[in-house]
Image (tube, rainbow over all chains, first blue to last red; front, side):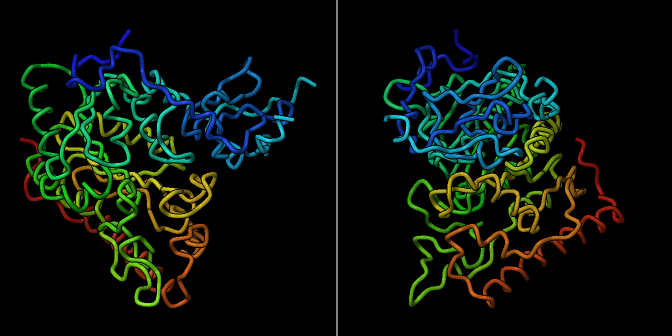
Length: 95
Length: 319
């Protein structure tokens, strides 16, 4: 499936009919956002402000980041009106 | 405990009616406001858009790399000197062929305010039917943080560094959006990433206005790498820029300026500059110069909006 409606080819490069290129941006992360499900009031500010748009709705009750692509910028934690998201260093998860 | 979910989902999500055409892991810095903007535009306007753009921070992602693409939109890469002229050709082709789509010329401030300003002004004068979006990160961020016309007074960049012989840029910044509004084009607006509902409304208005001609959007897009602030502060920087009137939000239809957000008690500009390292060296006197400039721009804007209401355009912009 392709959404590329107007150009079939843009030259020998960047043919959008192939599978899209995707970097392992999750590996850039130094801090991981952890959502406190009980404090989350499901307002959606983290989801709209996330530059990578990786905040996903879980069961219409809270939001959860897709850690495969989250770059760990921390905008979600900063913008959360209830401070329900905390940024925890990646090293803490490897122990 | 079940009664705790008293929050309401933000209305901005209602504007996001379309799919995100971008791949999840794209090569933008963490905390980049440009990434939020470029994902936001097709989600609001739909995927039947053609983006043209120039070498800039957006190009590595929009143009694709090697033989693959980061997104499934149609993109046309052009030179900085002819960005608006290329978009003109595309928009005219689609209009002649009867194909209904939206051509978006998506450029940074370097193209819009410096290198491609000539043909941007030309396209506005000819009232070409496309949307021009300038994401303003106040410098040439992709090539190594050189100053541009929209870099504000006092900002330290690699070509106007802070040191013994230089105290940052010693000139004032260009007010690009006001210049474009003076072309009396169907739609001009300024927007920023802290007010996404406002940005979505302006995008939809621009799409509607491009049926009548040229639409210009100036989007304030801070750069954590180039400006020197923590990536999590991106939205806060936008918010403070609005609250200090450093970057007022307004729109102009056929040159009639209307404020879309008025700040009742504007904060001093130092509450904005304190977040950002490129302003860290400014002393009281420098800050006062910046504050005076901000006040002057805002006062001019208010004055023009009053004058526009009193005076009528001598000729109709309808052709």
